[in-house]
Image (cartoon, rainbow, N blue to C red; front, side, top):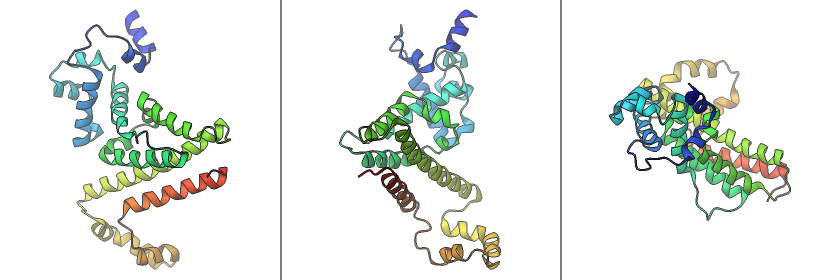
Length: 242
């Protein structure tokens, strides 16, 4: 019991950084995370259970539990592993270029791994690689005359836009798949009864003008990057940054 209590009190990341007596063991948290990511990418997060991952690895569930204590830790190592995709490279410099590079790579990662949009926010942030990404973005704002609260607010404003916009994009794609809609035209036809009624009430003239004249309705990349530039412009103007 004492050993179990100690495990519960020690951070997952502290445990993983401790030296291990069998560093070449075939079953590692990284291997468990890789298999779990493969399952989640194919079948969604609901398919990711400790029993399913143990089966995929060909081990007993208790063997996997010796490395990750349960669902939350499994999700955490998955998030940390895919967060390795976010590194924009050392050549990226300046606060705007750095925040923009992380924003674009975060969207790309979430589109590759749609299950990321389903996780509780804390699990999306508190891992070594996620913290490293946050550190680099905050560091890009350091030394510009901002206090630490303002630096964090600016960073979080960009991060909130990225996650909110991409979660909406992922949710729409999942809904389209469930409905059997392959593209924007299919989606608009499917939603036409509701939308037509609302537009015909005359209460939404500006939105109606958008539906009739928009040329980039299905260009999600352009929509994301245009919105991102608006957020970055707002940060620059509000805080007096170049």
